[in-house]
Image (cartoon, rainbow over all chains, first blue to last red; front, side, top):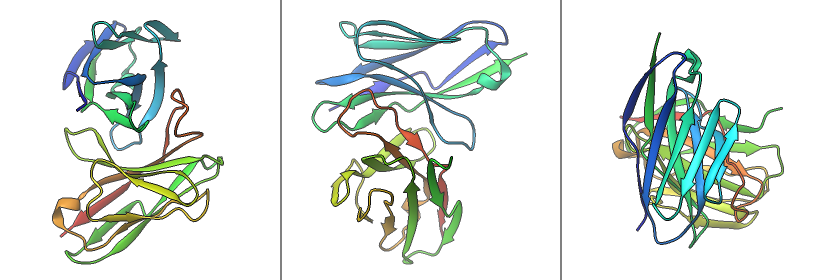
Length: 110
Length: 115
């Protein structure tokens, strides 16, 4: 089967940098995605890594290492509005469906 | 610029009642799906559709039915509501179900309580 592990909660200070890790066990997958969800809101797409390496989108970057079954989301210059839950997800090779981690709640302190 | 629209936003049902959660998208997306989200468990796929007339089961399909008669609409039916179905339900769509880098666009969710 497939499974993804993320820390349940991460705390950081406004203006700092934080890394949210995602490790996965899967027999085969197409890339790693990240989504953001504010309390009471809907998930919104942040990034996708189809290949190993770093993808950068503004203050957010995402990394994938297939050999290590590991990825992370890096948030720089943290702002209070970045307080949210962050989910990693992989696309199952057998049916193309997304399999989701349980999410990491990011708490930002002033 | 509606995107994915879900109705209702909130609903309370009694055990044994049936109801339909509505989902519509105006982006001409091929792929649509229904998830449920429970605290600490992320998103779990209930049913999905890769095009009009085609549906398939996800991870947790029991107790739910879907149909896809048009590209735009993908309703989710609860056949006989049970307290275990208390959850937040999200509908999502993407341009393609097989193009692997396509992001999913989510509706605002339906918060459903079964008493």
